[in-house]
Length: 465
Image (cartoon, rainbow, N blue to C red; front, side, top):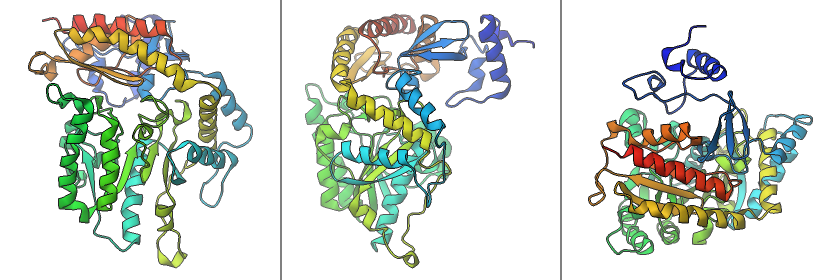
């Protein structure tokens, strides 16, 4: 096999697998030409052979600290023996069965346990395949609820500016990431976007809490104009992840719950990325002491092993669909792999680890170390802000610190950090020029030191003229 020129630098095994990959695959969120030698801005393709805890290992034995939990999914390390053993045990019993008219033990037990640990008042679980499908389910269920209740005019959704909820069309329709909306606008719906409580935009001297509470006025104004046609408000609690790791105070969620009750609209909490301990509590909504009408979960649900999502909702919502068949009120949604037994078993073992080990308490120690190590970067001449919520932290790079003017996007400064980190054994895939950290919970204090050191070196190099 003749290797492309950009693969000649790779050791033999990695070069072999990279060549085979590039001959047949099309990767997500990737301009595939970046994997070729184009103007020196090549993005190396890295075939991985195995995982060990917080580390990934390529085919030539090089190790990479997975500082982003492989797109935020991995909680307890790659090849976690407990979760792996549970899946292997389930393989000998049942891999999958149609979930319409049939059921199975892992699916039932997982629903019971999720409702036991979720915010109080949630009473039913509907399974999906991934995060985007969970959002689709919640949007459709909210819309259909109002139709069943005789209020068919409530068809629109309110979402926050800068929010991200997935890339299927319904989820993308309530996403406010300019690149996506500009490209797919003719396919999307007509949501109402309200300014985010993003505390990066707070005024000088203003606290996170004060800023977040002030931003509720924008939501009230939108509801005063549109509540009669609004089905639900959808938010990512505390951290808007893919929109740039934008963060806000729990007081906003508390106020939002009150507004939803006042104006009679649903609240959809998209905890796909922020659930299962990422923000410092098991669920982000806990920090505001609220219960949403719909709680969307995925990513960490199975510890990063298998695709699965769950939408938790209330008995009140469920009752609007519970009727004679002839009424036509049944919820219309299905996936072939709904409630997959292997994925449910992986999720059960993930919850068992939370139950058996002091995960949240241990994370507080890791969170503090991450905070301490990142704090000096706040003084960097090209860092606008260092922000953190629990086990999620971000460093925002800018051209001008005083004005927060960004680097030109074509300069791809964040990509320079990414390439530096790969060379030095860390996976730090940025969001544009925002370098973020979301490591697995098995990361050690020394490994936190290592990933921050690598990032700091990369930031110095990437922001040079």
